[in-house]
Image 1 (cartoon, one colour):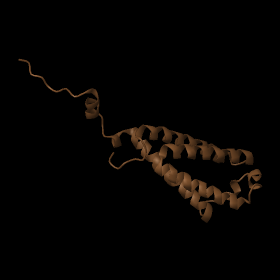
Image 2 (tube, rainbow, N blue to C red; image 1 turned 45 degrees about the horizontal axis):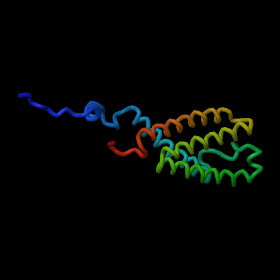
Image 3 (cartoon, rainbow, N blue to C red; image 1 turned 180 degrees about the vertical axis):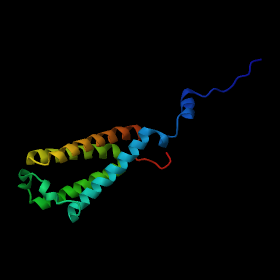
Image 4 (cartoon, one colour; image 1 turned 45 degrees about the vertical axis):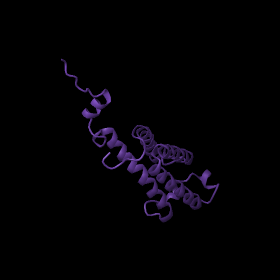
Length: 148
């Protein structure tokens, strides 16, 4: 008589060999990008009101400043940035895309201003990070969970 043994299916076998999600480098990168893109837009947005980090009005292209007084416009920018950070916190896949689009708007403003090309280049790099966060959020399904 031949004894039968239960053989786990392929998924169970892979799960048994795979490290916990929090040990995977891709998940760790996701958590770093998630934390950064949730917190930093909120901090930058709040600083539009208190001006501890920078005089944000000087980054505004004159053509844009003609639409609204510079500081009033920057206060609206601050609100948008805070909302974008909260959106990343609550819904990272969509929030990260909003942040990337917002950064491209900032880049356009800087190019129209004809100065601060270094900041535009930095913001382009940040937008790539936001796009990476959106892709990783699609993989890991939303907000990171402790010990996941």
